[in-house]
Image (cartoon, rainbow, N blue to C red; front, top):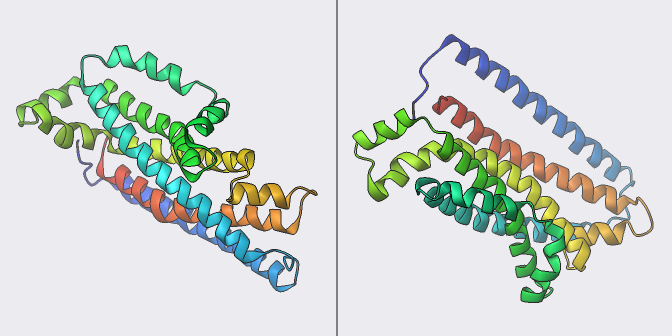
Length: 249
């Protein structure tokens, strides 16, 4: 890939990014502060916080494991297929698979894995994998031929082509595909927990909301919002910023 060089606009971009970064943290600090104030005043006194914490950790664990599996499979398949002469054949095949209604497949996953953690994890994998796979495939297919020729000239041939050309080329797409995949993954894991009554955040919210909007359901929603925000700011935002700084179109 081509590294970006110093440019006056880079400084403006960094200043804008820093302002947005601070604004987002101030907003989340306000949300957390409001939640702590409500808790102090007793508005969340009926919430079983240990149960909520355990439920959130179980869901986050399943999502993290599902993302890791989907990331490895998605990148591997995309790099191998995108590099091969059969990319045009597999592309519509993958497109059909990704358009299958995901939650309609839950009975199939239950049949093979039962009402277990593995069922939820592999069901989430089947949802997370597609944004990553297609983001990488599209990048490889749309890459300029000049970049491919340059990589060949500098020795990126055979299997060396994957780590020295295709992987760096696809890095920004891996990030964007991962962000979309993680968002879909939250929905997949929580939805599967709600449907199957397997212990986790989805089951916690389902139980807490059985009689309407309750303190427990509000607390659970705030907890997930905080986790999603913190992960975005600590992991994805820095990686995207580094990618934008390091690589040029």
